[in-house]
Length: 274
Image (cartoon, rainbow, N blue to C red; front, side, top):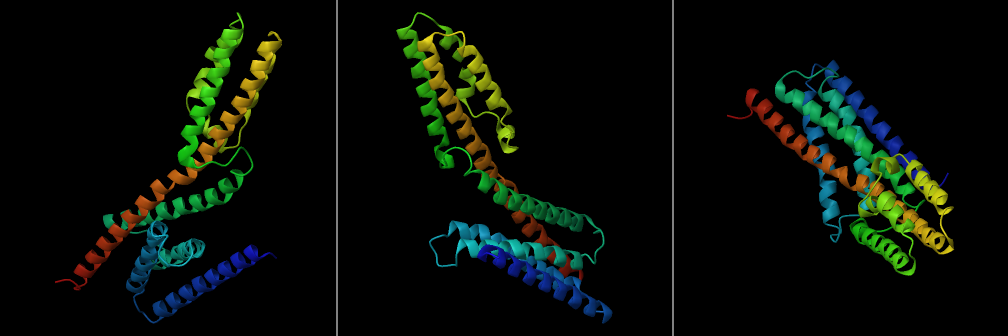
């Protein structure tokens, strides 16, 4: 077993043991007719607060706060553990009351978006290395414009060197829109090459009716189409990894706000706040 697999097995085992201890403690307190909601509520709030702190840790990378990889591992396994504490806090029943229902819904949305994010980070990150050159997300528009400029240079040079407009016409009809902007976001996300293969097949068929110089231009355009499609692939995967946080992080902060409101209301009605 390699080091990574061993570490994951160890961390998962520790999480399972912690979950069993929480369930055992909850059962003991319930048997002793003690209220578990207050302890589980504060515990859940503390855990969610720690999970939210991971986003701040990423912004304070220069401070000696431990490695980002260690924080990520803690983030994942503590997040899994919150599901047990959440169930204990609700006594494994549906919540009643508006604030409680909103709080439960927010927790479920945060947990679900976290699971989706974990899946995406594991699957898409590997796929980024399998196709095209890895580029910084912020630099993708720059590379796209370079490819577009190269394509236009090929087309215009063909018009100057030949009286035929066949290549230029094909570019205007079939390629111009493709090079202007990012295309096929969802197809790339599900790893479909249908558009790419279809366009390349169409270009190959069209090339049969061209002369030698025009076929040479089409060959260069094929290379540009492949490079642009690879760039779109990188954009689709990197954008998904980047923008899912715009769902997960705001939901987490909303959960913290409603959790604090919930605790204030509980304290007020139990006499904790005058």
